[in-house]
Length: 185
Image (cartoon, rainbow, N blue to C red; front, side, top):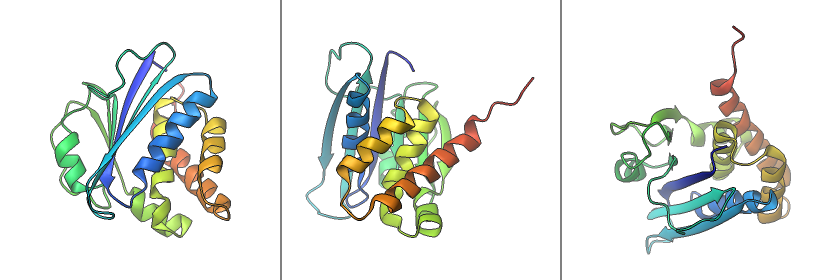
């Protein structure tokens, strides 16, 4: 992992992105890293804009706001339109192509994945798409370990949903593995 990674998780209200940001930051802290998490959302309870930002660093965090993210997750078309162009050159843009049909031009590496659709089809509930996305983020970046991410998920989700959320997290890690498998020379 680089010394500092900046994440922007964006989509619509009700997709659980604020919770995902809190879980990601908590996992980093559990590993002894420094983390800052901020959030913003529109006045609508569901359907309005939603954004969580997380900075994870091995060292001190000088400024608590994401300036130019290394990783952007866009789970709605509005989020993609607004944030896809604001990713560090060579960074990661992860798109939920269940809802994002037009991917703006960017200098980032783009992963367009059916996150919400697969949460619905393989886990049984679309509401865990945020946890699938966390598995993808951690799997692609190595920002936090699987173990601490599982611990953070289990500490933040409602009782009785543990197996559902762990299945969603596993799906995210599986999806990330399809892009990170090393081919022997």
